[in-house]
Image 1: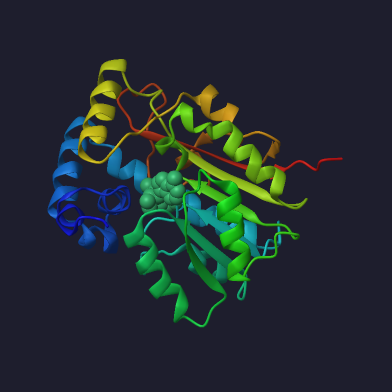
Image 2: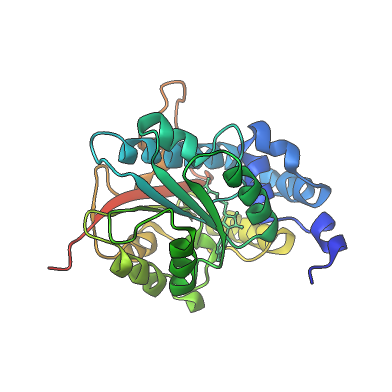
Length: 276
Ligand SMILES: C[S@@+](CC[C@H](N)C(=O)[O-])C[C@H]1O[C@@H](n2cnc3c(N)ncnc32)[C@H](O)[C@@H]1O
């Protein structure tokens, strides 16, 4: 059983992400999360902005996929994070397509408990599955049991800000390929991932060390390494790009491309290639 003291003192990936993102989810941060966030912000002041841009990318991608261009009515969101009442993925999906089905997956028991509470009582076609996304067969079994998503029909599979928590030993390439293999033709993959290419090696080392000590292991990758994760998909324009370059926010100036020291996430949307 999880030690209750640990729950209150240890930082969690989901709460630290929420605190960096700001807004409503920042209020859930516990002292351990706040200490972690302060340390990370000192090392990379742009981190909060990068996290907010990543969230915006996920929400816009969900809205676009559920809209008339793609007509997707089933979303599987792996590593959902805490379902923030102000920006849950299903709200973006339902704005474009009321009645679309959304299944969330997370392996953090607190995220899952909160997600079950949020999804059970809405009366919408939503579900929360508590599972480790590195085990595709278990996840897909759990998804089938919800009876919300028909895996014989196209699905948009979200892996936003998730895979950088997976070490090379977790075989992220093989895990993603297993999901793509299980999806019906016409499905999409949405992936975003922390990238250290805009930082000096020293800054990146310090940031990774601080996150690992405060929260747990993290594995930012280079752009070519992230491209290698994507597998059997045809990329939608602009391809694998900084998340702020997808649906740019006119109120944001963005970072000049020669600016070093920025924390960034790269994002990609790909249509899964048919097996034939
Ligand atoms: C940084 S949050 C990302 C939230 C959301 N996807 C987004 O991009 O806005 C990452 C989430 O992934 C979850 N997570 C990490 N490793 C996981 C795994 N192996 N299986 C399922 N969930 C995982 C964490 O618990 C956390 O809630």
